[in-house]
Amino acid sequence: MSLAERYSSVKERVASACLAANREPLSVELIVITKLHPTEVAHELFDLGHRHFGENRDQEAKPKAEALRTAGREATWHFVGQLQSNKVKSVLSYASTIHSIDRESLVKELGKQLENQDREIDGFIELNLTEDSGRGGVSEENLEALTELVLEIPRLRLRGVMAVAGLGKEPRAEFDRTLQLAERVQRLAPSATDLSMGMSEDFETAISMGATHIRVGSAITGPRPA
Ligand SMILES: *Cc1c(COP(=O)(O)O)cnc(C)c1O
Image (cartoon, rainbow, N blue to C red):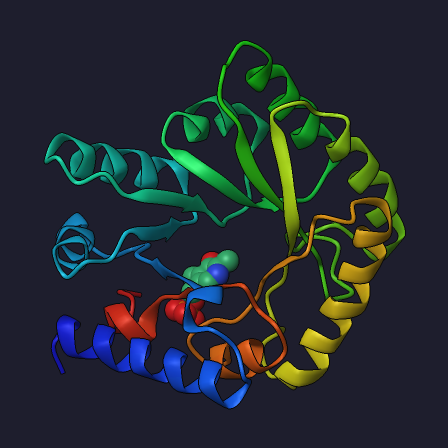
């Protein structure tokens, strides 16, 4: 299958999953994760009409975003990877949404960098659904404290939570847990109702459980180079 065929096949699957869940197809934002693929893939998807792209490393994302912009392709970039504080300034130069807010030092740096800007940025609090504290995402114990801190930052608009279902785990159980934790965030931030969950292997399940943002890579781009 070509890129165009994989793209349209995923879009059809998204539409069917929405229909099955009695949801408007426009209620789910498909973000194509282009990481580790050449910039050409993003150019081609843009020309097919796609606008939302995601990347997980600043070193790769920044030149790609700039290449598209230079070519007159105004896309929307989502940052979905672990974010070092010293990369925040750079990421803010092209991304409009950060899906991986997971610790106090990162929120403070976002606050500092946004202080001098006259624009807003959207953010998701990333949940760590594993027991491994080395993984990205906030632990359950720190969820409320981090949420309160995010709410103190002007120009950072909290949209909701982001989660990655664990490898080899049952996605439904992982997303159930995500929904429970999302409710805790919403007690403090009632408008933060968005759910960034679902990837190539589980986006249909995620849609059936209320995902508003799905992050799909390989099902569209093909396998990533090792
Ligand atoms: C790579 C990545 C994805 C996409 O993964 P696929 O399984 O290729 O769809 C989604 N979310 C995050 C955070 C990623 O790093």
